[in-house]
Amino acid sequence: MPHCPFPPFVTPGDGTVPDAQELLDRWNARWPGTIPFGHTVRDTSGEGWVRFHTLTHGRQVIRDGRDRRAAWRRWIRIVSDLQALTGSPHSLVVGALWPVGYDVRGAQDTVIPDLRPWATFPDQEDEDEDVREFEFSVQRRTFDAHELVRFFLVEHSITSDELLMPEDMSWAVYVYDGGIDVMTRDPETARRLAQWNVRWLPPEDWVGVYSWNRRSRPRERRLYRELADRASWDEPDDEDD
Image (cartoon, rainbow, N blue to C red; front, side, top):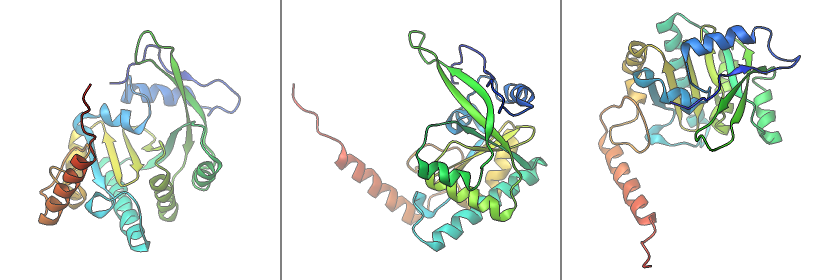
């Protein structure tokens, strides 16, 4: 669990979202001691986390229109199933205020143009280090199907840190290049979502970190062996002192 020596606080300023404190109280109740990054929410979700691949064979890059359609259809299905299981539709986007290039910011502005300052989360991994502070923004946004696809394609391509959440913050979805992480406070919801979409789970013995998995297909087992062999060849030889 991320170490927070000081509690998060509402980011001061005229542009801060009006109900920032209410949202922060809700976050602290749902995800205590957690900074709203995709990987930190994942790490504190325990059995409430489930990962899905967006492309076959764990590929990360969308190569063509066929890949693009396959990826966003998985995304729409997973978000729809999650909302059906929980009865909580998405209505919030939470994101870190990172300094990013104009191209990334421009892509984000096409789908989430109205992010407003929300809260600041102090973080300190070592007592001897200075306290770092991460500022987060929030936007209330209910996407229609077309907008939800655009949001997914942008997030998938830039691997940003935005979380899609419902108003009660009971679950979060994080998109990265090649996958979709679903984090919920209810392990049963994660289990059922994994069962409903088992074919998109990472196969057993696959590279990387994942939660539930499925039985590997012969082609996947061959590919995994090839990846493992390639990794061993890439390892540098130990040098003599």
